[in-house]
Image (tube, rainbow, N blue to C red; front, side, top):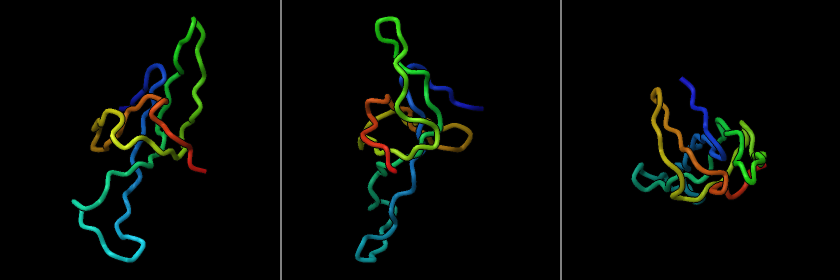
Length: 94
């Protein structure tokens, strides 16, 4: 089953959180912060403004930084995804 986002929504999959600090300390599961980097899995067609579709800036495969508590978490076929509006994406990681 696939997720097809509507309007200016984007489906993301979180990238793994760091398991060690820069100093080499291994973090327990509860101590890890919610990751803010994710990979774009699917992109909607874009928002409609004044009858015209505004194209999306991100594309499938992009790695992005999102707001910490943005989006809606969805579980499908054993995988966890986040659906956000394109406005909740802060940057594309190159």
